[in-house]
Structure formats: C-alpha cells, structure tokens
Length: 332
Image (cartoon, rainbow, N blue to C red; front, side, top):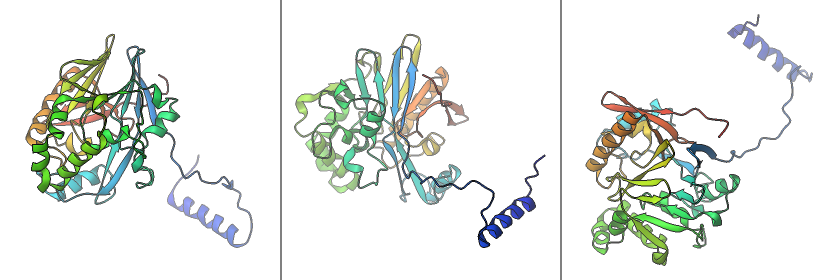
C-alpha cells in the first residue's frame, strides 16, 4: 500500500535533488517534449432535437475590477464574489461565447464576438470566433444569417474583418428593431456625450454598420426569426436586448444572451446592477422573470458570458439563483 504522507514526499524530493547534484540520472522519466504554449480550439457541439448547435468560444477578457463594476453594491462585496469564484484577486474575468445553429436548412450564427481586430491587441484573449469556426470545420461564407441579440461591441464587432471587410459575406444581418432604433438615434447619440462608455457604444454602432444598411434586417420580439428560433423580449441590458428559444421537435434551449453578465456575480445576485446595463432596474426585473421561467421549465440555458462551453441549467436558490453547468458530453 502506498503511503503518501508528507515525510515520504519530502524524502523522495530530497533523493531526486541529491541525484541531480551528483550528476546521477534520477530514476524518473525525463519530460523532453517542448511545451505547446497555445490553447486547444474552443468549440463544443450539442443537439437540440434534429438541430446541431455549436458553442463557439470567442475568448475571455480578464481585467482589473472597476470601482463600479457592480453599480449598487460596495466594491468589497463584488471583490468577495470574485474571490469566491477563484478569479484572480482584484480582477474579473468575462467570457464570450457566440452560438452556431445548424437547422438543416439554415446556418445561423447568434452574435459575432469581439472581432479579429482585437486578437493581436488582446494577445489572443478575445476575437477568436473565426479561428474556432474554422477549427469546427465551418466556412464563414456558408453562414446564412448573423442574428444579433443587441448592439454592444462584443456581440457585433465580429461581423467585420480587421480590414473592414465582411467576415460573413453571404449572411443576412438581423438586428432587434428596438435596439437599432435606439443606437442609431441622433438625439440619443447627443445625450450620451457626457457618458464615455455610452458615447463609445454609439460611435461603435455607427462605425460597425456604416454602409451595411441594405444588408440589415430588423426583427421584432415574439417572432420566429429563423427556422425554429423565436425572439424573446429581455430588455434592460439594452432597450432592445433579445434572447432566443431554439426548438426542434420536443427539445428546446434558451439562449439568454446577456440577461446576466458573468453568472458568478449577477445570477447569484440578480439584484446587482452591472455597469453595462442601460436600464439597470429593468434588467433586474428581466433577470427574475427570465430565470423564474427557466427554472420552472427546467430548461437548458446557454449564456454568452457563461464559462465555456456555456451550457447549463438555472435553479432558484431562495431569492437568488445558481447555475448548474451541464456535464461535457463526448458524443453529440
């Protein structure tokens, strides 16, 4: 019987050190294989009825937690939530995960990620959607539709290549009508001048969609926007923020987009307001409504900012909620 106590471990380490000091070769295998230094491709397939769906990882951004990352709670409480989730001390990590839905007749990409223009500046941390689509065997030219949940940069910028060309040249670009109306309004743009973050968002929409008006289709809530994909009104994060129900046969999943930002903070604490929400009170009400529905239905929930592969279930936990990640399925 092997006794793995501390004394035996220290003795073993001392023996190896002595062998090294005397030039003797220790009786353990030498690891001569060079380190890879790169991560594996980030894609994960799952089925919804007859539909084949793929979670595509666009990367994850780790940054110092802003003082008002959680607007209505002390930073100390937010930092404690980060440490409880084993995030680096004083930092916050936000993942990004577009979804590819193959209905058999249409290939639909829900959200497009941060864009390849962010790959080099971020040292490969974000902007990985195109390379992960390629790794999954998907030609960007084969995508029929890019279905945007809302018009924030981490969802829209991936429709452009670094040189400004279209990343998905044959795709119809679908946007929520309410969001399009809000972000293209000159009056709203003028009102945002005093808010640096919102000012940047308005400028980004103008830049990203310049010249694409003829390729953009505006959709409404409560409609089938693609085969088996129905838009769900989940406003607050933005005025036109949209989630989706993807249904095939008797199976259904809920793609929640940004109903919550990272769940370790805002699903566990649904009354916390993230700095990115346009109408924080409405976003709070939407979270409770959406998650009460998801929990009651025991629905599979896909989150853009969930840890990859971003598939799980939501349970009520008193006045809060908790995410139960789905087990990795080695088959489809």
